[in-house]
Length: 103
Image (cartoon, rainbow, N blue to C red; front, side):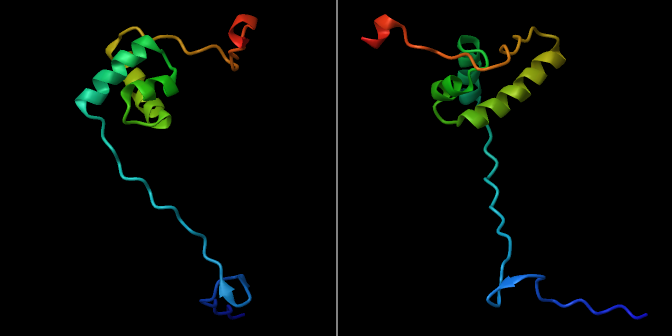
């Protein structure tokens, strides 16, 4: 049996208009400057693994960028044989208001 030639049309369409999945453009790769890394290290010693606070301290990076940089930084410390701070306890620790703070 001969194979049926495949159509160049998409397999599905709506009202004759092809639906093509959209790809988001990738964000450009942004390198950390020596000054940003220095602020990161300072903030990391003050707020270990508190990525939002570290990002605020650095001032030019998002919490996700800070977290990714932190993971690479911790691997670098492990390879160098330096002490790595332990990860946070599992589960979210809530910061409840006390009665005095509420007033």
